[in-house]
Image (cartoon, rainbow, N blue to C red; front, side, top):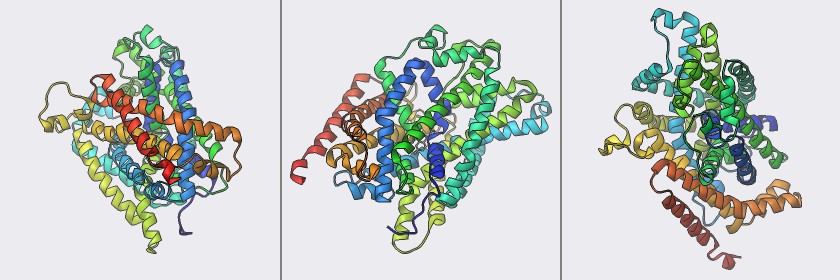
Length: 516
Ligand code: PFF
């Protein structure tokens, strides 16, 4: 490959960029709630086991394939696989679709940060003699498509400028400052949150097994299989796996860097930040609800409502310092969203940047990034205008279906999420594990990891996980995602997931002997 291909300036810079990709909205608005609802410490244990046996294994694999080939996902898969030459396309379509809603959410965060900044600077609520409540603000925002699109565009421009700056001059530079800043802001918010009266109820919800039911937050505990699916899906999305992002970052990493210890650091940091984010938001949300007489089962602790309704109420009720904490908090979320979004954009554009470089056209990063940004913005337009299904242009409305509908057609965000996080991600990871474990051999990755002299224990551990554990766990995750998006009889989705696993496994093995 061309010597002029981009690379990270240092291992620390790479780590900040990879952790930046991993730490995002998923950590803040998904993990804490899922942990509380699905059994507190018990969920954490399941999550950690999955992270070690599958997340870490796929992380090492993606980094190794990226670095070995020094190619972007589309070309990397072409270079290493006969049967799955096309997986790289999944790893470009998925980040594209994720960006189509991530950018809209980033736009929401920008709006809330501006709102709190305006309140801090001019006392908006005094001018309009009205308190800024979460529910009213959220409703007003969603039904204002023009505003949502404008802020989506602003978010895209910020990300575009960073990615145009290059791997070390843009992405690495942003993360080297952004990630430490995020950690400091998170600590400030944690201290404020934990000193609110009744904050301990939130801590119990998150950590004490079974407290979600006992404390009245939810009616019943989900079953073990469902916990497995939830934890697996959350872990994959949170670690940015099977979306081309980590593979692409790996392709910019120096040969001398240690892929195993880097992967351990990324997984550990992402999990730690997810737990810290939980301690920052859940106790504050629960305490504020209780202190204002809201029944705990009515406090929204998950998804967009946690960020944009519940937490805005926390800041509005905090008195004079509220807007200041609001600005700090939404800035922190914005940093997390940008650092994830730029990795998605890099994964989408890298193939074409490489192609031009190889064709002797020089560095066309700026032009390609501009085109990628325009295409993503066009897809994001529909998600922005849809306002989470508030404006009657959601897929179900267009299809003329009324009444309760499955999530996948309830709004455009879920529709985009279903194809990317729901299908492409678990399927891509399952196929990658089959490709490495069975079509090729675990040596493909092990050789790159240790340059031929990795420890025997790691080699054994890696081989068993990539061949057996990862494909089976991914089938569970696939089923879990389908149940979430399509609803209906759970057994059906398990059957679909395991039949696809069997079909792909058969396809992978067929003719293998002959080829050898
Ligand atoms: N890991 C990010 C989060 O937790 O929000 C989302 C994400 C970023 C997923 C980049 C995939 C990806 F490639």
